[in-house]
Image (tube, rainbow, N blue to C red; front, side, top):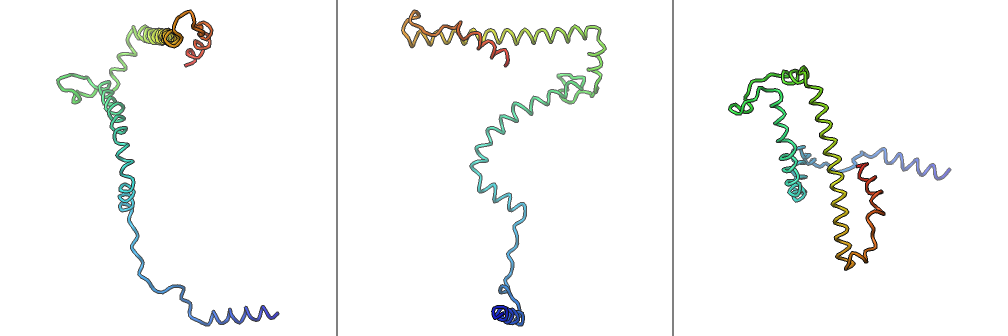
Length: 163
């Protein structure tokens, strides 16, 4: 009971005084979004400099070639370059309505399939030959070579066919 009287008396004492939590101070103006961005760039200037070459390469090899897609929708002429008259989908309609459109699509798919098969075959053969050269150089003679390409050519072929 005594404790409650003490806390009540201290509470009433606190309430009787004017409440000022802190002395009056002038608040500093908050930084604007532009100032925060400028400070962030200044603090991380080295990181931004490191990113410039990558951004240039992305722009050079990804965005500049996209300008060539505009030519598909134009009656392109080298004289007028990108100021050629706009024809919209007329070029695509000409392709689809052509009597040889199916043959063109089939030929494209066949050529791509042959290209993928030939590239895979020659890359595996090149890898095998390079491995044999490495084995001869490290072991001294081809007879002392302990790695036989036929023992791992099957798993390598299956792995390359998945890719």
